[in-house]
Amino acid sequence: MRNLVLGLQFGDEGKGKITDFISQEDSVLVRYNGGTNAGHTVVTSKGKFKFHLLPAGSLKAESIVLGNGMVIDPEALVKEIGDVLVENPKLHIYISSAAHVVTRMHRFMDGAQERMRGDMKIGTTSHGIGPTYEEKYSRNGIRIEDLEDENRILRKLKFIRELRSSELQDSPFDDRELEKIARELHEKWNYFSKYVTRTEYFLMDSVNNNRHMVFEGGHGTLLDIDFGTYPYVTSSNTISGALHTGSGISLRKIQRIIGVVKAYTSRVGEGPFPTELHGQEADRLREAGGEYGTTTGRPRRVGWLDIPLVNYAANLNDVDEISITKLDVLGEFKTIRICKSYGNKVKVPVDALLGKAVAEPEYIEMDSWGKMSESEIGHIVETGYDSVPQEMKDYVSMVEKLTGKPVKVISIGQIRESTVVRK
Ligand code: GDP
Ligand code: IMO
Ligand code: MG
Image 1 (spheres, rainbow, N blue to C red):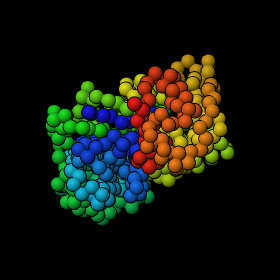
Image 2: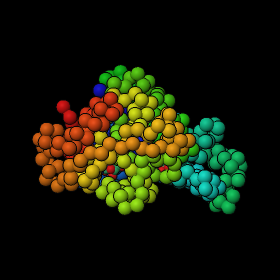
Image 3: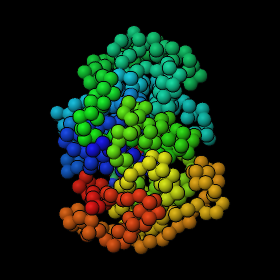
Image 4: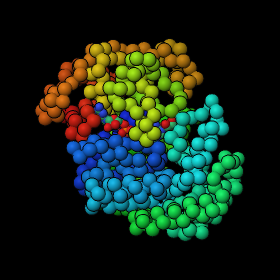
């Protein structure tokens, strides 16, 4: 089976947990967009693992691929590979020679651009993602394959410095510093060059050999550079089609597209958020859900489940099914709400998502299932979906009704095992 897992909201839906859940020991796992701005957490009996560049199922898979659509920070890469090989020493790693390289200079420019934007700031992760994609599309970028040659890196760095002089004002990047960066990047190359290849060939072979594959989308659909809440988006496409340009594998080869939906909504950074909660209610949901960024530690903005948003995303991605995560968190509330529409004033939901129309969310209220104890969750995991509290079943059925998509998997806790397949 060839699967695609992606998020139907603003990121942090729990994609990592679902990728890990459906990954097998013989799987090929693929990332195809973004970089360390993604943060995917997997919790096992051995502890908490955070992934930024490697796919979240790397703890148990056979092979992982970092596709050409990614922007890779070699420093972070070396660390993550080291950490994962301790847990899964037999893991095969393939890194695209055509992926682009994030350098310290790009991270600096990310921060500088944010400062220059003033009150128009985006709230980026400051990981250098935007400037690195800019370099890629202006054809001045440093690709992974360039790291083989220290002089080539230095030449490119100097050219970029010249082009970007206004962003690099008061920066520490004199010639000596650039020489240091070039040297460091080349040293990293010496560490990971054995993994570097034209990954599309390995992926095509994997498809032809009918391998179990999981493609993991970074970020969420509403952070897509074209379809998201521009300019409050990331710098890559995040919808399903990005898999093709970011890995070389046609979307036609994907047999199952899983849209991951958090039972409520969260967002980090700026931008419209129709169902956002404020004050005590928001604090309660944030605390119950542990809604602090995996990548930056920033408190996430939170709100109720937003069906117009999820439906827009589900259609854009042509999802086959939905996985709902963090249902346990809503047990914190007595009454829970689902936004079913944005009111008469909003003709097209995307207008509200773009901040062009003011949404007046129309909510359905439902009874909650209450806080579940660890033993209750354990019992459900052991005995299956039949043991799920009726109120939770009603909530899941309501999501199915409002989206028209089957909910096949639910997640009711952070740990890997607390995931229930609905037969
Ligand atoms: P991703 O970016 O979509 O992979 O999501 P993140 O890993 O950034 O954020 C999701 C957070 O929710 C992580 O800390 C997960 O461990 C946690 N999580 C995932 N599923 C569940 C769940 O069903 N219940 C609870 N309580 N936590 C969950
Ligand atoms: P995962 O894969 C949540 C957000 C940032 C910021 C905007 C642009 O963990 O779901 P960038 O650094 O990409 O230029 O920042 O996009 N953002 C994410 N928010 N989860 C993510 O990834 C995100 N990736 C980017 O917070 O608002
Ligand atoms: Mg995340």
